[in-house]
Length: 494
Image 1 (cartoon, rainbow, N blue to C red):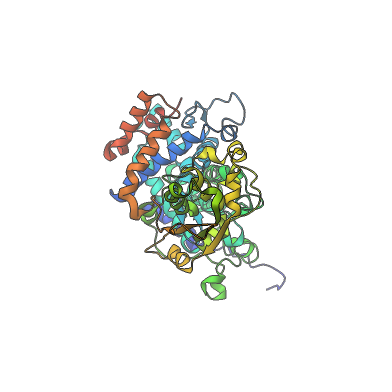
Image 2: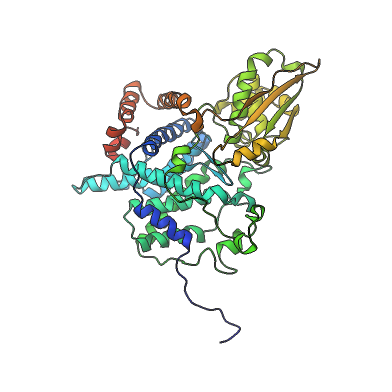
């Protein structure tokens, strides 16, 4: 055998790819908490998308790539009149759902927003449902959409538990692409081989860098990156169903595989053997854990690591609003992930920069008692210099306990505390919030407010009669699951 040649023995598909494929192709989502939560998640994500349509910086991205394009049985974009091919529709739906940083969240070693996958799921399901109805076949029902959401949440969330893509500078939308690829292929009727091929190509793709989420480059790409990823998932699923060969050794191939090229040091903090440091770890089997424990952003369109800081600031607002000029310093006690992601000083260049700044997201509710999307805009920021004055007085302190509890499987807290100190030596109490209102531990308190959020967002786009029709369609779990996808989407378009 020549020493100057590669061994060209084609491997089996990577075990992690086989685990994802077998999960999607065989898992049965049982009635219960996961499907109920998925219905709430669908409503919330759609509401976030409708609200985003008020912002021209978002809507400029929407619509067909070629004006006037007509797509038979085209997928619709909620809140608009667009009827697009499923790939572009997934882009648009994903873009509006994520634009305001207001949809659900998952926090672990990696972060992300699992309902970002709704772009792919709803676009594919709406298109297929219309095609089936046009052919006289049974349309897809919303039960199928909810099942796809449960599985997409699970793939993205379980992959995020121990695998920190952020540690190597990659953005979490790689997991949106993988999950969207899997469930899109499933909705399209992929075989196991086609599913594996599609998943392998999701990892072959060059992956997005996180730099557009962080100082000094934070900007609006973070608001459409998930739409881009979910759209790519639809495209890769379609390519695989056309018979395209896969790349079985995409992850572990020496020198050329994902682990060696892009994931070479992410697990060094986990005390693993050197040979295991480059591999994905799955600490639990795929099921419905992530959907059942997903985090909702109920009160604030803000990066999730700041949600409890915003709650604490709201509590303090009545006490400090008349004494803002007397403040000497503001101490925010937080966890390591918040410090690494969203703690920043200096000028803030745009709305996307501001909604990823812990100090800004605390200063606004402290001063005004609210935090809404419009308060990130340039005009609001320029009109209220008190925001930057408060930012300049903030000190960020890590609590080791908060950092530990953030990663504890039975806690998953996202704790922050805020305390204000005055120039005369007095201070407020230290207001600590361990679990945000969107946490599973606060479901009873949070779900009525989540429904109120959905009603409010519907009213920004539809007349009262249409709002009532949509709310009625969403009210009962069994009736919702039985509704044809395209009939539900009919209610959501202009």
